[in-house]
Each structure stands twice: as structure tokens, then as C-alpha cells.
Length: 390
Image (cartoon, rainbow, N blue to C red; front, side, top):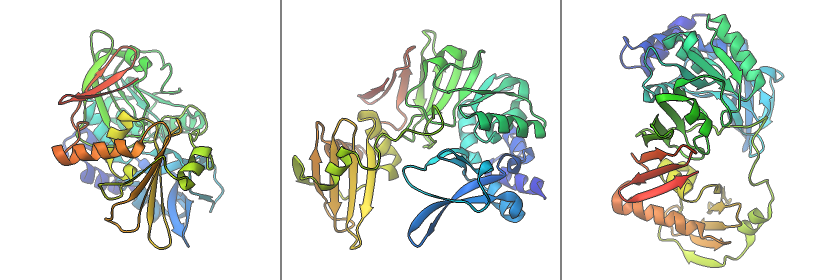
């Protein structure tokens, strides 16, 4: 298998300057050893599924898929691709979401570059498949790298695969949002999203150390340097990025099961408020800046959508406090009818953000300043706007 040529091709497509140390790391790291099997999304006869891919069964496809700048899902719900029977297929849906992956290399490098890693940096990273850890070892040397994951099997597999390519960093089982392995780190780079910056990160960062992470349910990359008071100060990076949320155990707990009362109400009830929207229908998860701003202002909204046989589209917004909104439009650019109920008017919050976008040309999350207190409360601010996540 000529993986070296494939790795050099990936490096050339991902890194602009061949003299970059990240170029060498990409060109010399065998990604296929870290992703021998993976899940891929498929659709057949309208049914969505996860289908298993086994690299050894088709080495040409293995090289093509693994040495492409793409994310490869290695775990769906509690199902590791490594353990799945040959040819297995799993239904796609809210109950079986991707729970671990090998992040696309360009995104991994974006996070590493934002961290401004130097040759002396003591680095803590998240494990996943172990590929990102291997890149860090190739750049820094194994002695300066600590890697953590909540999944014991992923930690075991990553240790073994890293050893196969000659790297022996510290790899530990750890809930990233809790206590970190003992040590002081110059850089913390997380390729899983967190609901807020954990206090343990601030304590583990060396003076002047930098953290780079994404905020759960947003596409916001936070870059922040530790401040003398034990907090951190930084900014929202200009690039958007999305990662799976940090887990605390085997799988995610869905906030909304398939048939809670609020979901039933949102589908069928007459709204306490019924209006015609001034804007065409929008499915918020498709828009990183609107979605991110809304998540900061009203955290925890569950977004769903449905298209009827006649083409009528409906989007839903649900919240654990009982708030809900249902917007329906028969035409793509038509004005939807909006029903809302519960203690808050979720669609009104969305329209307020869309008005900001039209009036100002962008949203305040772009390039916002970030100030994090020692207890982990993060305040985002720009041009008189601010929002805080604790």
C-alpha cells in the first residue's frame, strides 16, 4: 500500500508551505492506521443509515477516503466501527448520532495554528482516533504531548496505534470537562465542543498559556490566553468550525426524546401567538453565525424540520422550559405562518437576530472579544453587544 504518496498529497492540499512543520507532520503520519474502519452516511429508498466501511476490504477506497481532507466517523452512539460486524448498517436518527471521529486534517491544523504552538509548548489535546495526537507528536515530540478521551477503548486503541508509528505520549481516560491529568500545560486544544470553558482548564494552563476550543451547539472557535487573575482573555476566531459535543459517558443524553409533551404541542397546537414572519423560512442549524448568536442568547434550543409531500416546509424550535415555535411555508421564499407558545417567543428571538444581520451586514459574534473569569463564565462582546455563558 503506497500510503506515503497519499499522505504527501494530503499534506500538499492542506498546507500551503512545504517547509512548514505541519506539512512534514501530515506527510509522514499514516492516517489509515488510526482509521482502519469507519461509518459513512448513506440514503437508500428514502431511508437514512450508517454503513460500515472496512479499509482492509478495499485498500484503494481506504487510501482515497482516509487521505482526503474529510472527517471520518468512527463511533455511532455506543457502536465502535472497530467492533462492528462486517457489513453492518445502523439507522440514522436522533438516537444514533456520531459520537467520535477522526477530524478532517485542515480543521485540526486550524485549531493547532490558532493555538500558536511553539517547539517548547507542553500540549494537551483530545484523543478521538489518535490521528490528531500523532500529528502533535510529529510536530513537538511525544514528551510534550498529553492526550485525553472519556472513552476507555479509544484511549487503549490510540495508545497502541501511536506506538505502532513510534509515538508514546501520555494518553489518559478523562472527562474533558472535569479534572485534567496532573501537569501544567502551555496549550490546551480541544477537538470536541464544550458547553462552557471548564475551570479545570484555567487551573491547568501555565501563566500566559493558551486554550483553543469550540462552544457546544455553535461554530465559534474561542482563542484565549490565561490572564494574571486566573481567567483568560481572547477572541472569536474568524473561521467557523464544528465539533461533536463533549460526552461524559457512553453516549449523549437527548434533551428531547422522540415524543415529549413539548414536541407534541409544537406539532399540533394552536399558538398562543400566531403571526406572519417578515422573513422567509430559515433552518437555523444551516447558518453558523445566526445559530451561534441564537445559542448565546437562548441556549439549548432544539431545532427540527419537516418537508411534506406537497413541498410545504415546517421548522420547529423547542426548549426545555416549554417554549416552542412552529413556522410553515408553502413556497420557498414565501412568508411563513408562525405559531408560538410557552414562556418565551423563540421565533421572535430569531427574527431579532436576522434584523441585526440585515441592518449591520454581519453579526456581533464575528470577531467578538472573549473575557473568561476564573470560575469559567465567558462574556462575548462587540460594538456594545454582549452575552455571557457560565
